[in-house]
Image 1 (tube, rainbow, N blue to C red):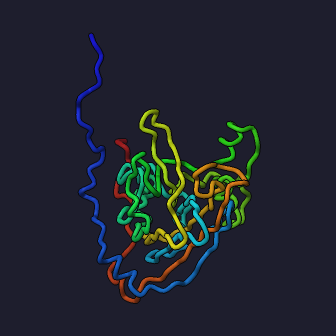
Image 2 (spheres, rainbow, N blue to C red):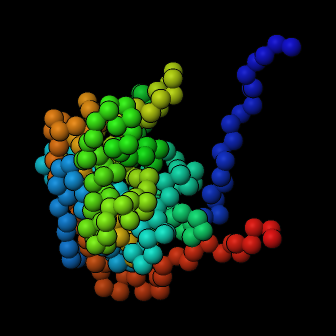
Image 3 (spheres, rainbow, N blue to C red):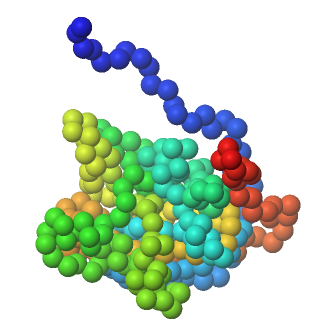
Length: 275
């Protein structure tokens, strides 16, 4: 019997029509007149944490040069609930932008943040199939770096996020490292090669003044690493690539704009699993 590739048409795995639509008017009303209440400067090749109360906005800003960042988000009241990049990818796409939500891990499975503004939304998809803000990569880490290069490098994004979370919780890195999870690669330009389907990166188009903005659907603890790859156009983890700080800003919504709003509830699934 001769072999041939199936002519069947692809089917989108998850039908998301039943999910609440992005209510642009609601978020725009909350953004109109919002007040900045805090900021955190994330130094190059390092990481920092920040808190965002439910119903507030936060922005990640490019301020000095082309720089990508790796973002972790947790339920500020329970670190066991955290951003789930895999489910976010399945429900939206490999790269996210305005109107997309960041979902939490099982069993919570609820939106923890909604993207409300993205100055790089214009980029879309390029001729190589690359886009901005991916949820397909993990994070540069010292374990893979050691496996491939045989050296200890302590400023990979995984280590930056681990140190930041350890400082915030006042715990040893060995006690807290397991809470660091797959990231949203903020400002990163990535895709899969068309021939070998390997994950690739290219220089980010981000410039000072660009930002991505989120609405915190629940109380959030965030951690952001200013990646040692800089704009990720040439290198991944080293101390020679030009790197720049990133600025996180926290905003309080305009008075009365959230009347009637409440945080989404965790998944209503019974959790009996057929038993």
